[in-house]
Each structure stands twice: as C-alpha cells, then as structure tokens.
Length: 222
Image 1 (cartoon, rainbow, N blue to C red):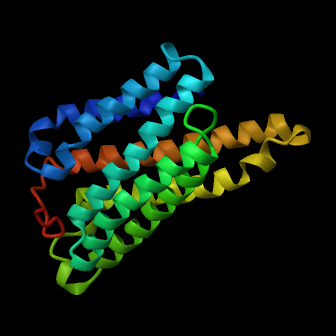
Image 2: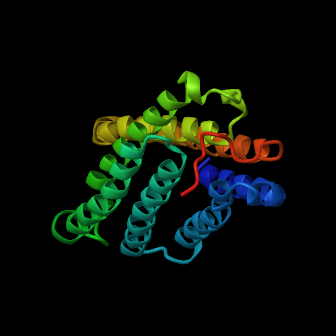
C-alpha cells in the first residue's frame, strides 16, 4: 500500500490526541503532537499539493533534516550522561551545517534527496538509541519496568526504523537496476512499509503508556 505511512502517521496522531492530557504531563512526549501534525501535513502536501519533483525534494529535504533535530533534542532530554547530552547539543549544529553544505554544493535542495546527510542522521539516531538503551539497563536506572517506559518504545521504533533505513537505502540502487527493477521496487516498498509500521506502532504504544506514567526517572529535566 503506497500511502500506508500516511495512514499510520494519522492513526498515531489520533492516539496522541486521544491521550492529550496524559502526554501533557510529560513535557517531551507532548511535543509529538505538533510534530506528528507537521509530519502528516508534509505527507499530504507532497501527495495532493506539491506534485512537482523539485517541490517534493525541497519539502522532504527540509523536513527530514528538521526531523533529525527533533529526535536529537528528545534524546538529549532523556539521556542521563551529561557528556553525551553535551555532545548531542554540539552535533545538532554540526549536522545542520553539513546538511546545508550538502544541499548547496553536492546533492542540491530541489534536484535530489539528501541521501548522504540522511544516512549520517540515521547513524546518529542508531547511536543515540543504543546509548539510551545502555543507560536504561544500568542498575541505578531501573526503577520502572523498561517496557512500561514510554520513551523506551520511542527508542525501539527509531532504532529499528533508522537501522533498516540505512540498510535499505544502501541497497536501493541495486534493487532498482533495470534487470531487477519491478521486483526491487516491490521489495523496497514492502520493507519501507514494514519499517513505518514498527515506527508508528512504537509511537502509539508510547502514547498509550503515558496514561499510566508520569515522567520516569530516565527523563531528567532540561
């Protein structure tokens, strides 16, 4: 299903809105509501309004770069290690500078997708996810069951999604070669859809868990 990711985004947003009061008690999780609204608007805009390729590249390049910044800030909030939090703060402007240089001098802002900096951002997400999971299993951090922590599910979704994205995007040229194009496109779409199911399914679980969870000890204040 070509538009599966859009439907999943909308479902996840509706769940977040349903648990609005519970998410509001958790500062970091609450920001998923405006984030998912923007995400859905971007996807709908690309589908029904901005139909030219250059318009879509412009839209998705800017949005995906902003998406990495949003997730980085969330990890900065939830990680306990001060050094790691400081590193994330430094990496955000570093990433944005690389993104700007990439779209200006290498891949273009409106002529292609910023695959180079997308892969770099995906790598950062995988690393941040691993750091969070490592901190979560430390004895001093376990005062709430890991499976009951909303951000644990956010992390699992991001880890699987971006790890899968790195792999599938590294193979996209091979999958879309002329002698393998039809089957390759089907494989690419099926894997992408599966990754989106995992990502937004994890988000939805996290939103539901907020109903019975106030900020956990793994979510230090800014």
